Length: 365
Image: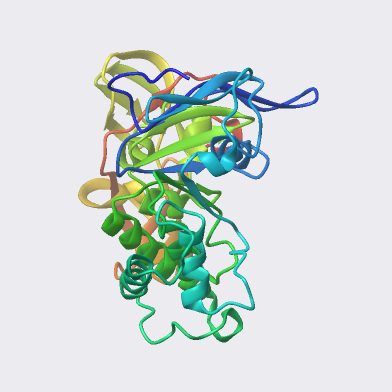
């Protein structure tokens, strides 16, 4: 196997994974840098877990190639076994050993790793102690998995995978078994763990807040294809397609007429994220991009639903146009009240045939 120079930590090039006649991954291409966290985001069945498993060495490539540290580890003709890839993996079910303590579960990663097979060596004990402290599990070393909370079990699974200092850590829907409040807490803690260790990681998830909140870059997938790989900010505010927009946040579209760097719409003249658009188009206006504005257009609150930090509104303008608004709950606008609204950001525009017709902004009768 040939080692390339100046390579990224991981490179996936035109990867295909087939299950018989089904192309589970269709020409995927993505790279990962040292210390970077990448999220694979998409609906169930889009191929993200298959791509992760191919990187881990559990699925064979039908075409394309995968390189780790510039060395070919997977192609249709070459395959490095999973145990020789220096890649750790955290599964959805955690897969902790019920008969081993927290300390022993974490140390198991060292039995399989470069520190050697003697778990009780001084070097291994120091590594386990370091990870216990890093994961906030001091005092729990002698407990068994059934004596831990779901969040604690998850941290043990992550620490076990980090123990041998893998070149890359793969996480397959690691937060899916947790309740929403704990999911958020664990996402923050796992992110801190990964960054403290400086480990590169790939996270598979169908939860966009998870992907956007944890990753340095997000690759959105549909039907085995990576539609866009970008920073959370660029993906959210500048999706390259309607499919990428729908996967990265709430969508609603408005008919528009492009005039260079401006789109003329029923909501007024909106700044375009990418100037140069001319003629008919449709612009994406996410509900949270619509904000109170003293010189904005007047609209009446038709529906109101408090969801904690956000309040969902359906408002109607004098023209009969109705839009959805996601406003901070501290902004007290009651049913029947008139508010003035404007669009706070430059909006992306798509061709009239590209934007999803099922998510358009409604016009009045």
